[in-house]
Length: 139
Image 1 (spheres, rainbow, N blue to C red):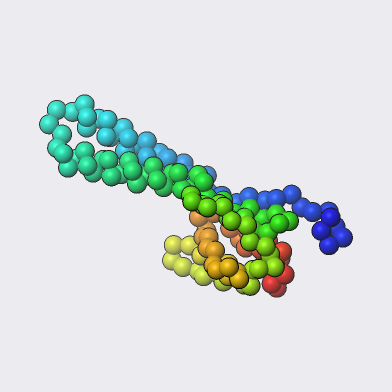
Image 2 (image 1 turned 180 degrees about the vertical axis):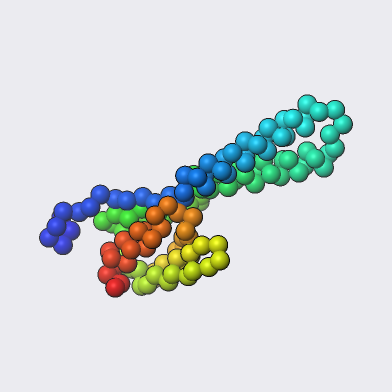
């Protein structure tokens, strides 16, 4: 029970499925390109280096986007990135700044322990913002 009512189930927010799919498709394309270059006669070293660069880039992006998540639960806001998983209590959240931009909206969650950020690349980002504001009793 939370404040006299039944607790809601945790909600997890991840990058849009379309974004993760496009990044994985690009990774697959560059992996295929790299192997096609290996089979070709006369492919230059710079072509191999370029293809390897894009394989590494899209593989890293794919791993990052597939790991990234924000979970709202009774215990607070849990952020999972490539290198860490951290839970911030709603009592430690001071404010949420919403910053509209040309390529989407950015959200800065200001806490006693520093800032957390997310953007409109997350599916249902507005709901995530609303849940944070409501649970932290910011407005």
